[in-house]
Length: 394
Image (cartoon, rainbow, N blue to C red; front, top):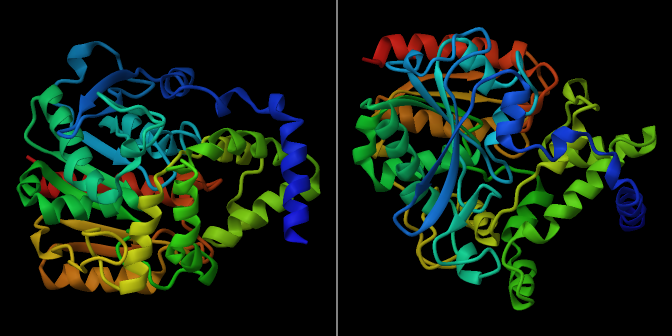
């Protein structure tokens, strides 16, 4: 029954692809400019040849835009989660999305993108090459983040920056600190939104998908190395969420199945845009999380899914860490977050651990796309950045 429903759902989507609002297709600079903010673009090349696009909001809407106003401003780097990109911190618009709110608060906002997103390429490989997709968040932490951080500090001529990550953006941070602890000195403090380190209590359906290598191996055998094959289909399916009430409800139920139910915070007018902007990822990224689920250990990818269990060394983290979790997060459960918090507390780096807000149904996606994300999460979060920067920044 579900298969039939989904087939009808998808067919209807393809017939209405032209209905998507312009925000579904806009580039990141177009999103920022149309919201009334200045924007700069940068490229950085990693040690292993990936070219990553970065975006910068150097001032708020009410700030004079002369270049000399940026000098000495405190930089904040925002890093996205799996199947996301830099637009995760922009898509809900001014007064809601964190990128805009930090810029309005006087920060120099940098939006990074990991390899695999549409904002990435490679010096020698094309996106059709199997080798292009041979990575997980292990490479994000060892290559992408160091290159991005070094670029920000090179441009700003400062010694350190503030880091905020969501989901895989936190996973990659902890990988970087484990494998390249010299980067501690380049970070003022770290706010981890739904930190995806221990993920063993996720929904059974997600556990099954992450642990099942048969599906991804079959895809590889057909020359399909990533979820990029369905990128355009996401845009088509997104149109269904603009349709009749029954179809909108199917979209909401599908999202709730994966990340947790919180109907009150679903903005139906934005749901098609959010779905249309879903990013591709390598199968290995999913498999790496599956290895963590299977082992119960925050382990490196070393020798693949069935290979060596080598725990990342969290004791290498030396920067202050604030953790924020969702009460109804079905991908990164509260119990798993508190396990991480205890480990960080034991090594003396836990600044705080708290619920995102008083909302008991706050889920994994609400951190970036909740209807009231500005008021419920980001307004207090900006105050946290102020406090931590004043406490630990130079």
